[in-house]
Image (cartoon, rainbow over the protein chains, first blue to last red):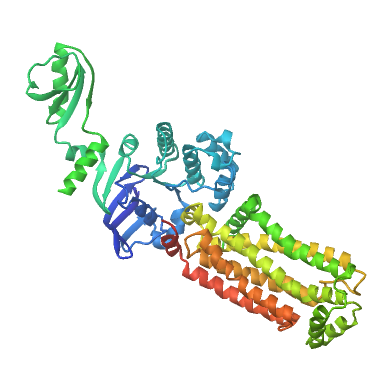
Length: 303
Length: 280
């Protein structure tokens, strides 16, 4: 059974002679959530446009849902949903009318689907209000509902959390996770705000200046880039020297010590040893966040 | 061609036009002034007052000159047989000089609705969403054309019906037959006006798909008024007489032009070209 829902091979895009993407190759597993990460201007939005067939690649091969976006773009667009950076809704229309209009465009003649999605995104009570009066978070949720009207197999999200407050971000992340699990929708999320995606994505594509500089699951990336483990332990341990059990330490305030380890395998023996002497309330690896990994990867590609 | 999608786009845009007071109120005011108030006042003054019947060479001479040189014999005779100068002027105005005013009104309406529909979509950043959906560019353009054509014709025909009622009620005793129910007006309203409106909308959409903003689209659309002004001047001076046959030929020419324009628009506005030029 085919498990790759998106495949690109050596994709290049030039606009007016200016290179936007160069030799972009990656694949995305069906049912996964993939983060396409990179700074502004890295080419993330261009990749989404190419995958939807609304612009053409200058060179290379693309397959989305087994189809070529250049020649079968309409089939791809029928089976995929998109949330663009600007929510792209009609502000002079109500939430209901917006969804009703897009359901006609996508050939969905089922008002129950609109009601269901409004309910899922906590918008049922405001369905008859003009979208222009909504907050950014509400607009994003309407936009998400719009993208899911036709039960797409694939969902593209371009900076879905831009302009949202922490509550808004959490709710969008929560809904995406639900959509992925409950409706089995494969999701590709573009973002430059890395920590928001940390707990939702299965794998990542790191994009820089139009090139994929790294890809893989967080585990793969940690294995490859995490040479030193920095473990912050909240404990009653008192250490006078600069190391403990041979591991260099750094005091990070009262009752907090950060240990430098060579691998994760050293964590359990260290904690066991401490527990023999005193209490431990928490322990956390501090240099494994997506952001730390990103800077490490980007740093290595600068060299 | 997907009729449901075309209808959805057209219905949405038409609702948007009639829900925006900024769009429909100026349209109603313009129609009222040019197509109802102006002919109404002229009919009243010409038929029910003696303002135009005063013995004055300044008014009488040019009107008599136009009547004497008029190319259609039947019209020349009808005008000569009318008893007063006022009734002659009203009859001439309603048959010839009102035509360009309707033409101008329909042209302006189509310009406003077309630029609101396509360039407005771009300014609201919703064109991107539409291009990301499974709509063919042809269906998108066709939906937009209908969204502009229907309100424009609706406004124009409403103005025509009201104008016909108002003018005929005021002038029913002065003339033997009802005004506006002749071949010239029928060909003009139901053949030339739709052709002109369609031509203007297509041109506007072609321009909108190339320029960056709503204002630019309207400026280009403004150029369409110039030929209408030319027609007003030539009609008023008796230089160029729009007979039903000439009107029919103008309409036919415009419909052929419209078919070519539609082909041109869809051929040179593929989705990727439109996207790269319009979405940033």
